Length: 267
Image (cartoon, rainbow, N blue to C red):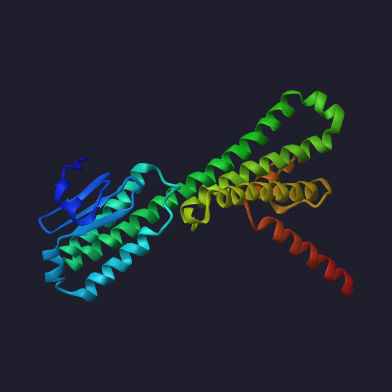
């Protein structure tokens, strides 16, 4: 990446310059990124005296560049930040060259670029925490299954099956997250912690929903999906997975129970 420029010429106009990335250098102006990836530029006196072809359009470009440059980018890797800031620099360079249409087009591409990279990063945070949370519970489930005779002797078979159903609910919730991932309106500007907490609590919500479904099966309230399942224990675990995968399961079941109670009270 070239940073070869007429240092003596521009430092006479600007003072000491720290150029990390040179975007463009012409006879009348230079655009560059400093070591902190901040965008900067210097123009000659001749350029300033001549002025811009269209001050309104140039100022509009400057305002958009300033707005986009203020977007927080510290969460991105250096390559992404560099590419983004270079696009802003290219837009500014086009505006200094009086090509305002192309400058506007580059700004649109820069905004789209950082938005897409933000979605990718947010998805990475989301899936990373969801996957790690499920792996933790899955490891507990595998341990409990391997030593099931000992575990059943301590907590009882019913609680053991309910526990497996809850873990199945975590797997179902993870599958639901994966299926919906491309449709989620994620934005890394919300912060890494917020995305990870939401992801973790969606897994926990799936587990609680699975527990509700498993308890309904164990209590004898057989759901239609289990009408052909002869083994109640298998059905309990199956409904746990389904309940974890469906965000509407718990609310719909509670609504049915409430409707049933209200009908019974009116008789």
